[in-house]
Length: 215
Image (cartoon, rainbow, N blue to C red; front, side):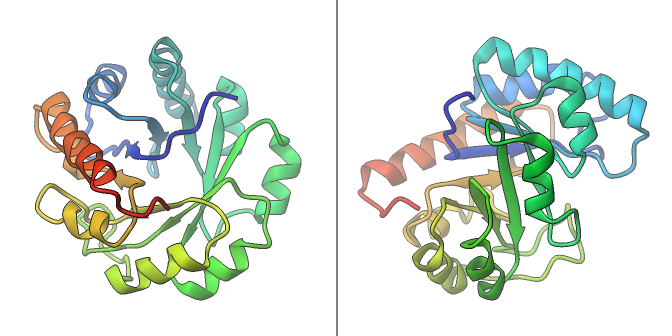
């Protein structure tokens, strides 16, 4: 298993990356991404397999873990480093049984009840959010900064803040004591992917050096 550094967790988006997904991911990694999640909700399995293979080659080149969203079959097919599932997906215990304990398993949580439940599950980390309103998931309920603080206190595993985080509000998240940040649009929207990533990475580094509590 590759070293798991969750501090700068980037997630691909099929609406933002129309082509050359491998190049887009490479730019994000060059900008400082420490984990890549491949997420595609509306693509067929063959396309997903091909894209995941492409991303895996890039991630391996830079020794960055690749997590596949939802699709355990795709994760196993490309030998990804792990899987991330939501509350409506296969139970974490089943996911763990399928992929084994040498792979990473992440779980999305939307509220503090789910955070508490995750403490009893075989997960390596949880995503918590949406912290702010987000364009990539219009139906996402906003959890907010105060609940993020409580989630960090409650959780027995690292917490990754997700949902609407960008350059204008990332300091709020860092000040809440969370230095594991997941982003989608903030990196992949527009053509300046590497530059977007570098700016966010700089903020995250600054947050750590200021002595914020690590999640």
